[in-house]
Length: 337
Image (tube, rainbow, N blue to C red; front, side):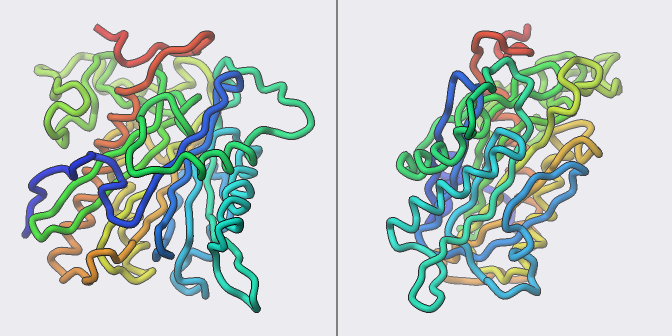
């Protein structure tokens, strides 16, 4: 088996060649949108395990359906209103003549998923139309290989049990040179820390102190087994963790589906409980194929395992990087002692 040896140079999903990420935030609404752009059409799939998802264009990602590749993915706040963000992204890509060619027309293929951030202290009285279409368009314009984590884009108004959530990302490089990256907007019903401590459940996978370097507590606190959710804390029903796992290997849609399934293990490693009836937990998988090679069986097993650990790290990094704002319902992780 081939172990993970290091993070990529940015420790972001954009260490996977062929991807860029853009964010747009409305600080008054306390919400925003994140877009993942593919330099060239990429193979994609999705796995949904939460009981309350909100999505657009996910059916086409199933391995038995016709369209093989996509142009972009959208993660957005705003609950069902946030699905408008994909229309803004489509408009921006159509201006660039990017999309699936049908009879002389270019149709950008942009699946999307949303999270519920309506009860986070932001002003949601936006008038006739929500801001998400324009946020989607603006996110495309800001796309680059480097981007900020925490309170930005789809993570702007995110929360978890007892803490502010955020936008997280991480990357890993296998000994074979294959790169895998994760991007996630963390807005879970459950908790990302052990009991009420500052120790992340994802601690066993941390690389280089990337989310504080505190490891797991020893001994485990008495409240480690306490089930902490927003039903206990506040803001019940305001949940969903949505993410993207990506690799530079050449994958079929079926393999991409398996990669998305494996990445959900990262949710379970970093959030407790996860995949509840009140979460819309979802993972998109992307394979850019930029490496020019398909994985051998052993490498694919390692890739799937690394998908879980990289996603867990990205979740912790998103919460670790969150910054405070007025009227927040929960404190940020950095306020914990």
